[in-house]
Image (cartoon, rainbow, N blue to C red):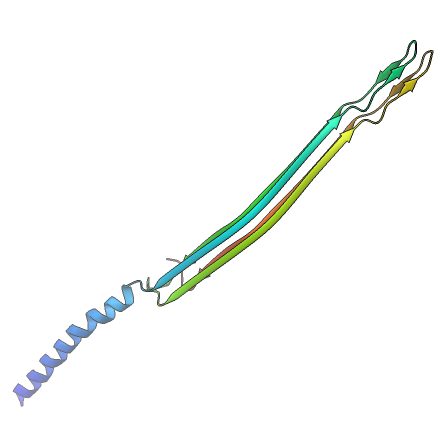
Length: 157
């Protein structure tokens, strides 16, 4: 009877010796994580800016013309295809996670700004003049496309 118990105990130890490494290996291994990010962007950005102090002309024997300052600011910003993927699990093991992000963007952005202080003209024979103020123009555009953030499971360690 003692021999049978000893043989049974030995078999149990051998079984646990074979099973515990397999269980431990399963819990601590990282398995089958596939992340695919494909981003296509076709962007056209056109920016134009012009400024002048007017179309000035003066005719006559005497006179004066004073114009102000003209200033123009134009800008454009484009941003496309930003992929952020985080895969976390509480036991450092992941089973069969597949993330696929496919982004296609077609963007056309046109920005224009123009300023002047007028179409100035003085036509006289004696004293006279034209005075204008300042001119300013500001124009801007912003484009965003295909911004992906994917977070999969688990507790951050």
